[in-house]
Length: 210
Length: 210
Image (tube, rainbow over all chains, first blue to last red; front, side, top):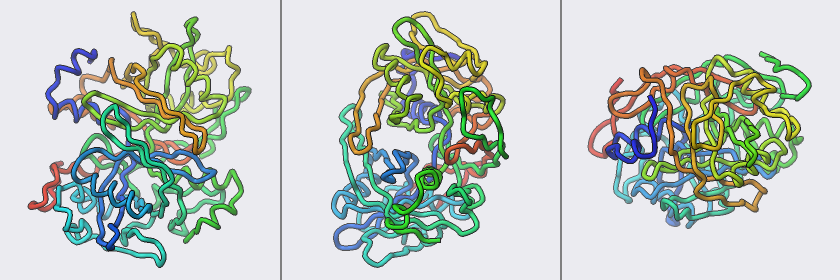
């Protein structure tokens, strides 16, 4: 089926949101943990974390202008730190529930039953259940006026991964760690590795290594 | 296993690249198609496409300062349009091979055997083999000085999806379309849906709908 800009503009807003959200491809499913200056915790599922670079180790994320994500952004700007925790298969339902519009004074940890894990000297909570999780320090914040979203860039300063998921070459087998992928607004997927590819070179044919 | 900023800084650069690239979670696998002003085609695998908003329909992507991705960026800035094509299971190897450093005058379409599909009036090539693909017009370009990457924001103006993958609510079943996910630098995954969740509300428990 073929759609033009006119067809997309004529879609109802819920239909278009479901449609456009499907187009970027599979998304990472992460919980972003923050706290306000008084230490009150907040947790939000975010599907827009993206790798920015490894030296320095930077991840970016897009924060939307919804009430739920605004609490997260305000906390990040206040404390200049946050955590990113992979959503894993055994807590998909609790992770999804953090998207509900809880009032600011209610912690999504308490509301969903997910546990807080605090590291001394780091002002944002990790998710106790997550076995792949990292702590970040805010480095840059850009307001994207085109649609009132925010690009948040942070440096990875703490990482926990399961011993058995860490490969000899540094790659973390996030499939073995039961991390899940998202599609669209609400669909969660487990994964199966079909191919690992060797570094691509112009004078060699593509070469699977696994 | 626990890593501090000091541990990360002490990693060798290849090890750190594999490690940090694994941390953002599963990534979308997309081929970005462009052409220069003379119509010479270019194709690059990009794992950083991210949903920015559905009204207007905007996707963002990060372009890294590598020779391969620089050709893509230059073409986008020249012609102000590009295509995003899902990598699907039957052409993973050719898609990965577009990451090789081919000279500028060699098209990755020709080099990898992927086919060009042109739409009248649109100055960038689509991938013939891709059943989920879109055409975008450049809206904004930001240079991120922190690590010399580029944020490219485009509006979706053309979309092709398989009829049978389009749901009644507008969601596209990209798993049924055989789109794949990426992890790290080189690992490709198929997916299985484990849960579709109802819209989360504060006063209701999490509710799977599928």
